[in-house]
Image 1 (cartoon, one colour):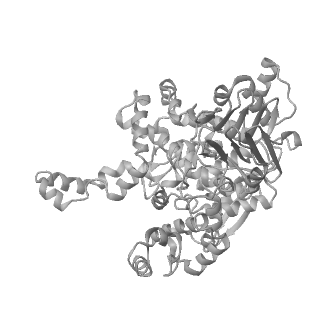
Image 2 (cartoon, rainbow, N blue to C red):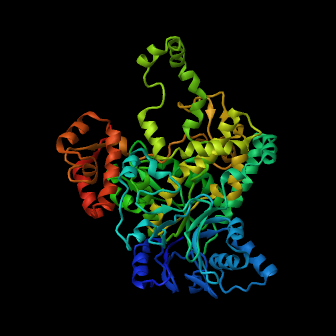
Amino acid sequence: MCGIAGMYLRAGLDVSETDLRAMGSVLQHRGPDNTGVLIQGQCGLVHTRLSLLDLSEAGNQPMVIGTDILLYNGEIYNFNELRAELVETDGVRFHSTSDTEVILQSLIVHGVEKTLKRIKGMFAFAFYEGRTQTVYLCRDRYGIKPLFWSLRDGNLYWASEVKALAQLKPLELDPTQVLFSTASTAEWRQTETLFMGIDNLPPGTYLEARPGQSPRICGYYDIIDDVDEAYYRELDALTMDEAAQRFNDLMTKSVKKMLISDAPMGIFLSGGIDSSLLTALAVQSTRKLSLFTANVIGKLSEFQDATLVGKHVGMPLYDIPFEQMDSIEYLAKATYHNEAPIVRHISAMAMLRVAQLAHTNQVKAVLTGEGSDELFLGYPQFLTKRYESLVKMPITLMQNMYNVFPKVKRYAMPSSGESINEFLNLLSQGYERQHQREKSRSHFGFLSDKQFLDAYASIQSMREGIISLLQRNDRMGMSASIEARFPFLDEEVVRFAVNLPVKFKIGRSARFHNIMHPFLIDKAVVRKTCEPLLPPAIVNKKKLGFPVHGHRDMRVKQGYFQNGYVAQLMGMDAAAEEYMLRTQDVYYIAKLVSVDVFGRLFAMGESQETVTQRLKEFVSINVK
């Protein structure tokens, strides 16, 4: 993984090398091994390299062949097959062993659209086609690698992080979106950011900028297109054992591909079933791995489970203690790298610390277990929906009774529809979720409405929830120059999961499995696959989700918000703050603190140290 940034200016304007180097300077944590700058006419590019494949200078970037230039961040796992094909079929001669050159040669020979459909992996890159003087910005299928862009006065700018764009023009926050971010809206959006005039390039798309024309965004992949009735029917005919074997084969191949590296690698082992499965599969291919975990001090710790897995596979486990107050100590630093309020995944601070531990041990890339819960329905809400009608039965009966007297019902049950919070949340998102679901229904025409909702849950999770997790892993990992890789997001694994009937994802048990869904088993096929590979305590473990002491445990003293971003945004005086702290839910107040930290850093220009000092003075963790 690396850091990339660049600009494509209108005719008559000169690209500034000073500006390019300024952009690259704030991306050094993404690529500390080399910095390359190149100006070609109206196009300027800067690259900071984290060397993982072909550690020689031949792998440095920007990479140039003739008049074509590539600026690339990521890993392509099928680059050896593509390389062989380019040599044998197209007569291409290579000068390095890097995947970078494979992409560039493919772009030259086959063009952008065909190359994007053929490469498999995680990537964000800028390709300058010298013959047509066209810039292409491209992003991988699932949005693993970040790429931000901005159009100002007809000039195009892009970067791996918003901070790089801030070197050209001061950032301006969108106050409405920042306020809505208290409800986590900023963490799963595929396009918008919290910064005025700066957008995400959506997953599965590329931006094309030709001379004298406005940029246009083109899609080359949508996960819904992986839906295949024939494949669904084929999988539906399998037994659970057969489905588990099919899954095992796909994951084994995925893990083996993602272990390719010329630099030391490791695994982030939380102690949960997903990272434990990756560990068990990885040691079948290599023993040259290091395992890393956060030892969360207190009752939330999964350290014992991580230790059990490490001993089971016979690999050393490195841990870093994560104290209760570390959620306060590292909040400003994590928010700086996250470039959005940390509202949804308070565990970001613990992940930041584990990344620092990996860096200290000279590791450059790690495997992580993200994607399993989304693809195989591992979150409790997917299962508790099965009990929803039973839980709501008394309310339903009362509603039916009141239906006889509509006027009385409106008086007695005024909130029977959406709450104002739900309404505003959906409005801020442009009803994106609802539009996507409606457009996707036709792809599942072979399923009933109920089966569609079950099958679509994985699609929706990959379009929404996974975005925030990938952002967390990328930002926290790269804060310490650590690349995260995701075996569950291998293209063939995703296609398998999208077409896998729900009976293999949600299993049934005669025994009490989990208090939230007593006789239903989450990620059934994943657990079945783990049975011969891991101890029973791990196979049967309920999902915890990397728990740390966070928003629910934070207590805020009066005075914290004064002269801060939220107080300015909302016109909050001391009396209003006092009333809010005295009467409102501590959980929501703590989320507002996260928003305030973001505003102090990115709108008010306060340093991480200043913000951290204020947090330590006014915010504490209260654990009973």
